[in-house]
Image 1: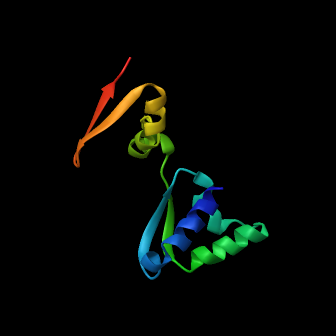
Image 2: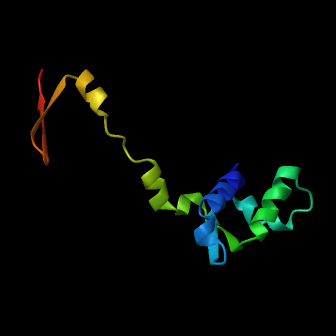
Length: 105
């Protein structure tokens, strides 16, 4: 599945990455050894061929060591406007740049 994400990103950013040297950082150790694998299924072979079009290296970076990405992925979700209305929060726009919320209990 991680390889599918790499392939998706390469296709999405092709116009910026093609012809450039770059590094793919992953917390999935087996991707680092992907190019050395002897037996791959059809889809994996197709994706490896796509990877060969790029001047890139795949480097392993342990997930536990990547505290910034971990913190961002676990960011607390703020309630949506619909959820706030369900909690009884009334919203009034005082002017174009200010939104004032009044809690009615």
